[in-house]
Picture: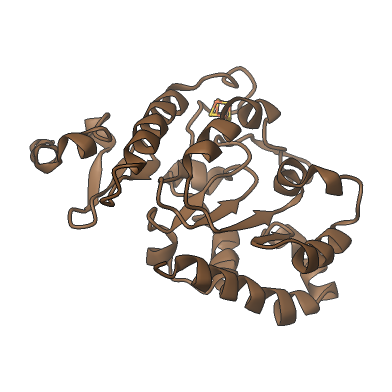
Length: 249
Ligand code: SF4
């Protein structure tokens, strides 16, 4: 605890914004000044003063998200929002909602879905969990429980309450990957009613800097087996988008 306190003292006032819950606080890398706060990752490095307002607003929203209990009566476990965002993130990954392993570890996509996703992106775990680069913003932040066919849908209330506010502070996103129906329906509402395969093909041809995919969950293994063009054509495109988005310019 004392060590954590000392780390907090080394932060500048701007960085002190993030030191809100000492018992879960840990400095990931003091040089890049990233911090983990109650399973929400934020990062506020970067010299650009114009970013300060986004940083402060983002912190305020994240503080509110961390305290959120809107779905407490419907969730099988106490609310435990898991997401990763920063004002400098270049790549936005939109998933569904945390599974039980993500809920327990507090690490987004810390499961086989995440392994497949990282393969698509062509990045290591370290790169993926670098909040300067990747924002991981699912359609709901808390574990919704499971039903007969897997995890239950993300509570709509979460996106209604938080999504637009958070997206407004992600000022540098250059590429967005929409993983699964819920993400696609929210971000590309005009595609509602279309077959997923059609959406994946058409969005990759028509839309710049957004790629729609099935969710990387093993539940979609049948779809991936039936559609080998996805690995052959779409995955290399995704990797190219990611590399370009992360370039320094
Ligand atoms: S899912 Fe979202 S809206 Fe519901 S309790 Fe968690 S953070 Fe709040």
